[in-house]
Amino acid sequence: MRLWVGLTLLAALAPVGLSFALNATTAPDSVATGRASYRRPDAVPYPASNPWSEAKSALGQMLFFDPLLSRSKTRACATCHNPSLSWGDGLPRAIGEDPKGLPIRSPTLIDVAFFEPLGWDGKFKTLESVAFGPIENPANMNMTEPELLARLSAIPGYVDAFTRAFGDGAITRPRIEASLATFERSIVAGEAPFDRWIKGDNSAISPAAQHGFELFNGKAGCAACHSGPSFSDGSFQDIGTAKGHDIGRGRFFPASAKLRFAFKTPTLRDVARRAPYMHDGSVATLDDVIELYNKGGVDRPSRSPDIKPLSLTASEKDDLIAFLQTLTANSPVPAGPRLPR
View 1: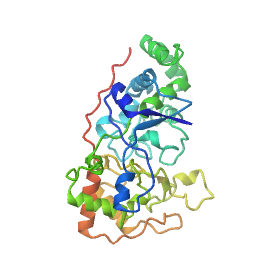
View 2: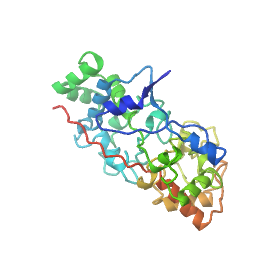
View 3: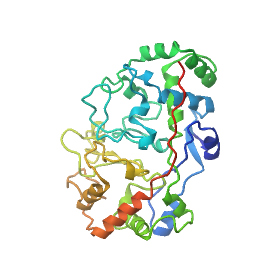
View 4: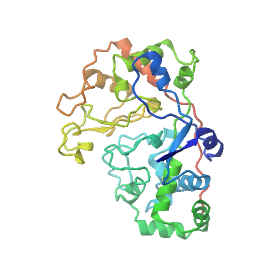
């Protein structure tokens, strides 16, 4: 069961001044129905097992920005999910405490409330189950659960914050997970020119971008996977790029030919400022992304049936880029909270 918290309430209480985006829905059949299908919802979903509260979200925000969650005390969740970088890190692959880095790039957290399972390969069933993955990973934050609990419990300000959120000052792994997930569900896309256009402002985006939207939903076939207000259906697809042992979702379903090399369809919100692209950061620019899809990727049994050569003209590629640029929100960069010490 999911509880929906209104955006007006969250906007009034969110300490970092976030603005909000949409729930995913089905791909449109026409431009007219397409515009309606991309409208933002009025609320963000929270599970009944971890309902929203102002105190819990505020605690989650403090934890999210606190480098005490890493062994070296130098890396926070916000290091890889930086609000000034559209909640990513701008790197081809994430770098943690091990300078060799990780095999995949940091995904944006924009609209993370709307998609489960999570992770490029879907290994996290819920948002609550994500936090200690990077925290305990030796290559990432390299922290143990006992040491983290001891660190936080030694800080009176954290004991007070846990008391406000949960009724007493006990600091436990489930409470850390619940608090971080509560805050992260508030990270949703700000209003972009595209949103003003679908609400009726025909001057909000250019004629080229409007034509790009038609291509996105038509000839280019992008909306087959990048559908709805968050521009993702939350599915896992082989788009014909991964290779070797980098098999994504196929790790968990080795008997499935279709899930081999399949990775999570990411949101396209703020996509123009979230380069490089793909799960491994292997595609440098949006122009390169469009060309990759235009060629159709590696033809193999696992490749999605929606991936095929598109025969886009140069002007059509330009119009698609123009449309994708309208998904960038002009949101103020939220400041991190004051951390208890």
